Each structure stands twice: as structure tokens, then as C-alpha cells.
Length: 336
Image 1: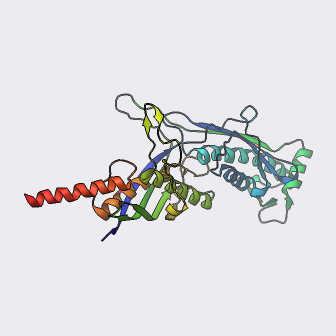
Image 2 (image 1 turned 30 degrees about the vertical axis):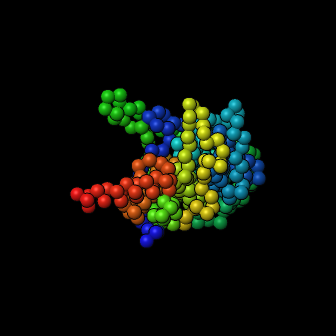
């Protein structure tokens, strides 16, 4: 039979934010005239969707809609530092900083409303652009609430920073606390291997990942799907070569990338195990979703045709060579 199918599984864990060094992020929040919200932080949007996530976080914390939140200029000469986009740290570090700053701004607003209505601050609810007293018929729009605050000399602004409590690694035994938060994941891959050509087709990937708290579930699914496709490229076709310090694969004619025809069905399972330290319970899912994909695919190839590929990418040539070696080894044993 020319085509054989197999399934493989792999699991992994990943540490969130900077490794073995203190990470930090800061943010400012202001509830503006009209009941809109402005967030200022040195965030870097590189396509990961962090602006949407921060708008959702601020809206939830203050009590407006995400459409009413503006993420301001991210020039770190004018706004708090949020550090780099990487290490799966954006939602964890900056999201928590924005949440704390938003809570600070809301507390200033609610304090004025509590005095105005002569109720306890804990009894005031803010949601969907309305501030009201729970269990009573006292309410006003957020625009009216901001006007009331400013008429009493209060501008509802907030600021906050969020940092990690981590340590370096012991130079002798490597012990330490290099990360504050961890995520875990497991993936199953199903492949079909053509024993005549050596070609591998990934038919499906089932990916279950702990993300802490999913602020934007569709965004999480997108991160997982993107990570799987990126990992499949590394696993099966991307082969960056150097000769004397210069690349011999400078163009896409030789450096092969996955296309839409190579993307399998990705079935994402979002597991929410909230982080016990951060105020939001969020973690992250940038790089972690890539970790189990390649070993799951390699295990699936082994399950299908009984050969173990130990160098990447698992090209058709490598698989055919491994199959020939397997056949020759069997023939040698039989001859003995």
C-alpha cells in the first residue's frame, strides 16, 4: 500500500514573560468626557491582536463597551514602558497593567458617585456605559458620571504597573524561579505518508492548551492555528541553509513555505486554568502552541511507516532514505 496513516501525540509546557529576569509593564487609563476611555501604554502591535485584547480588558474593568476604548500613542517617549512584543508576554504583562490602571481610574469615578448618591462604593455597578446603584433606581450614563466628577474637581485617571517576581538561575545546579506563570498543552497529529514518494500530508491537528483566562477566544484559536501552520513549515519543508556565513536559500523558490493547501483541519480546545498571581488570571498562547506540533507530527510519521526522523525538516528524501535503510536492515537480518 502506497499511502499509510498514523497518529502521534506530544505535550509541552512554556514559561511566560522574560526568562530569569524581572519583567514589567506600565499603563495609564483615563475616563474621558463622553464616557469614553483612553489607555496609554507602550504596546507593540505586530499582528497578534493585542490592541483588541486591551480594549476588551479596559472596557470590562471600567464598564464601557470595547468600541468606547481608544489605545493611544505607543511612543515610549510619551507613555509608560511596556517592553517588547515577544515571550508570550503581551496579554500577561500589559493586559494586567491595563487592568490595574483601569481599576484605579474607576475607583476615582466611583468614589465621587458614591458620595453623590450617599451609598457605599461597593454598591455601584458600571457596565455598558451606565453607572447605577445595585438594587436601586439610581443611575446615570458614564458621560454624566465623568461630568459630575470634573464638576467636583476630580479627573478619573489611573496608573499602574505589573511586574514579575522571578530569580536568576544558580550557576552550579541551575535552580531558580525563571518564570512566574506557566502554560501547558498537548497536541495530536494525524498524517498520511506516501511510501513511494516520501511525501507527508498532515490531515488534522487536535490542540488542547491552557491559556489561563481567554480574553478573546477567537483570538486564542487564531494564535493556535497560526502556530500550528508555522510549526508544520519547520517540520516538513522549511530548510534554511548557510554556506560560509551566506544563505543559499535567499528566495521562496528554494525556501518552501506552507500554503493554504498544506493547512490541515486544526481543532482547538481552550482550557482555562486561571493564573493565581495576576489580577486577570490570564497567561498567554503565542509561542506555546508551536511547542508540541513538531514532535506530534514526527511521532505520527513513525506510527505510519515505522521510521524515526531525527532532523528537520522531514523532507520526502529523508523519509525515503529512512524507509530504504529500514528495508535493508530487515533484509540483512533475514539473510543471517
